[in-house]
Image (cartoon, rainbow, N blue to C red; front, side, top):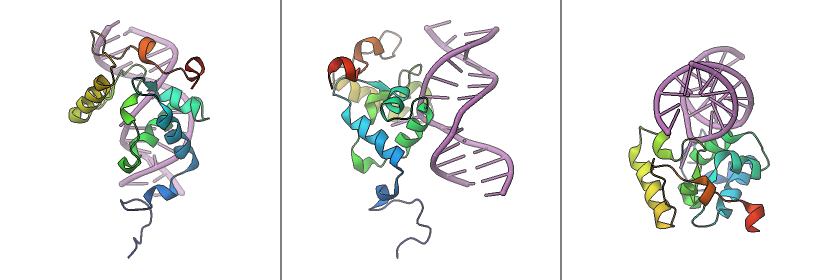
Length: 127
DNA sequence: AAGTTGACGGATG
DNA sequence: TCATCCGCCAACT
């Protein structure tokens, strides 16, 4: 019963075979304070894999909802939000905006997030 | 095994 | 400021 292909697929224990890198990334994302945002590049750096922003993105895309990660707090540096990037899924991007606004993150006039104001800086914040 | 994809980011026009 | 292109590299087909 188990699944012959034991690779992907949804089911319990799915996150059990996730690579350490992914786990490190999820740990970082979990630490993002409410009302703050972090770029993928930052997440990668904090996870111990500087310069691998793309990998951080891949890990997030593959992250099981079951983990309940604050995925909406992770944004692209230039892309402001998922909204500008994933044009094929405008619904999801709208959800991200909504969740951020609920946390008090205000968007700039151009619809982007002001990283200077809401970007999370662990060293400065002391957490 | 080899080619394609992509929740990125910097450089360029 | 916005649109495109390019490099990086793990995951997917």
